[in-house]
Amino acid sequence: MFQKTNLDYIYKYLLISLAFLMPLTVSGANIIITLIVLIWLLSGNYKEKFSHILSSRLMIASIVFYSLHVLGMFWTEDIVWGFEVLHKMWYFILLWPVLFNIVNKSDVKYFILAFFLAISITEVISYLIWFEIIPPFKNATASNPTPFMSHISYNPILAFAIYLLGHEVLFSMKISKYKRYWYIFFLFTMSVNMFITGGRAGQIMYFAVVSLLIFQYFRSQIFKGLIVSFVVISSIFFTAYQTSDIFNTRVNDAIENIKSYESNKNTPVGQRITWALNSWEVIMDNPLIGIGTGDFPKEYLKVNKKNTPQVVTTRNPHNMYILILMQLGFIGLVSFLLIFYYQIVYSFKSHNKFYRDVGLAIPLLFLLIMFSESYLLGHYTSLVYVFFSSFLYKDFEKS
Image 1: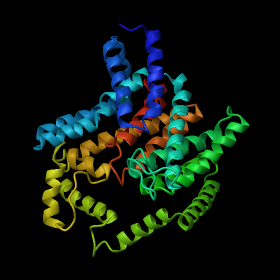
Image 2: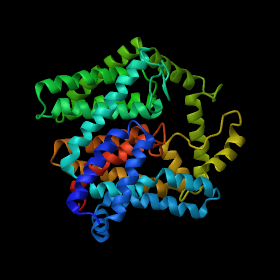
Image 3: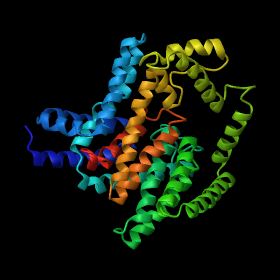
Image 4: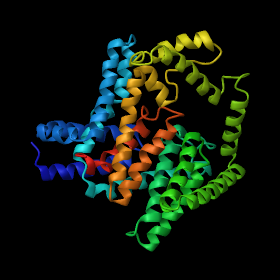
């Protein structure tokens, strides 16, 4: 039905479109994803496709992880919520393997430029709202200007864009002097934007990004990297704390939430602590295979009523590790962590600095922020993770 040359061009422009749309619109990205998957399913050569996918231990790990969710439906009681979880995580069984199979690494520069353009547009609109030049819309407010998505998703994606931009500035030998200056300008404006929006996990990820870039720059000088990292991060934190009302408030609120936990558990930080502690009680009763793919809301409600009835219940503990442990037990968690293990192993095997550094950054940064949110359940962050992971490890499909 499709000639291979034509397919390559179709995929190229669809993937560029996806790179541009994924930080901007759910519906737009979903249309592109649907087209990609349909073309892939209808274009034949299934033996070659599946052979390529199954030659990668990373892809096998992703497929096994999703398959455990399917198996978990057999011992779940809430089938409806179970199917909701399967729907949220379908990227691991189909989209990631499809992208891995079709992406051409010679097109990566176009994907990154499209992604940069989308983040730049988002950032400019964020500033226009913040300066009250245009009225807030969708998720944005004048005090927390994140228009296209909530700050929970926006700040981590912005932090990752800052990492990619910083890596280009520090390590790319191919960009011109003027382009480098332009990138430095956007590094500064994106960094400021990080602290006029309210995503704490993204801000923590930002500090991790700065540290990672510094250590990758001083690769063989660990002590020097530690000193520079401490000085730079301390300076940024102090400046942001003194100049950004929203960052100042979010930091102070987090500290106060922790200090007042015993007397008031119904705060943003207190709720997360309580959700984790209550979930752990259920995990210890079902350590090996968990309670099933769909039973988190029901089982958590029971333990919450018993232990902390004054705290609001939840369908999601806002911690990816706790969620997987409760649903699928330690078997599920090991399967999940294997995905990141292969990413880290493959990144160290690369002889290309970009793929080595960014291939290490993605798992480390996501492993960090998933302590505060189930980021691979959300559309925006999971799509960014899967999209970039689809080409960063293609060199090692037979490793």
